[in-house]
Length: 213
Image (cartoon, rainbow, N blue to C red; front, side, top):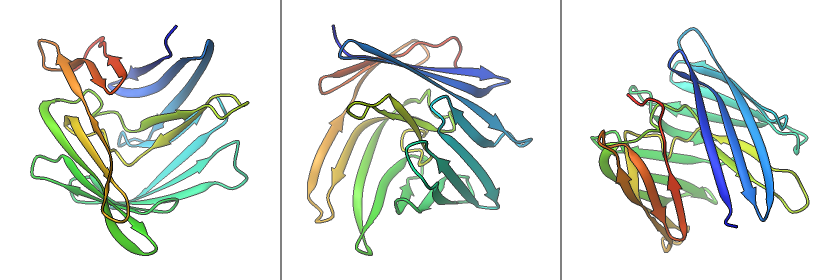
């Protein structure tokens, strides 16, 4: 039996209110969920996962502070994000330091990281011209299952796959400037140009929508 992952986004008043993650791996099933809350400006302010991971988000002009508390860590992780006047993240400081560069189509095209205080190109992206169903989702979901432990869920606010279009190619570079890895994605689309399936390497994904405007 092949390993599978199912990710469901549930909406309330046009905002993602909860996320359900189901993982079937090596014959074992893991189920995780998270609840999202918003302020009166429809900005996400907290995420609480049922594995006791918690994220609190505060806003100050063009700055966002994200505090992540994980049951596996004794101290919370603090990250600071800087926005441009379009509301796009252009800089991240904290657990990792990154700088984000966009093109005229509002697509994230380059991510720069720091190594011993020196900035280098870490990743570069190319896109299709079709709508990305994840554009309006305020956080990206990641997961891991450490050996001998339960599944863990965590959240990424860097919005690397949250732009207006779908990533066709992602190049990753090491701090010496050498290309270390490339992921290429092939999509099939529905009549509204939303992805219904994608493949990359040996992995494939299927997408379904109750509604998508």
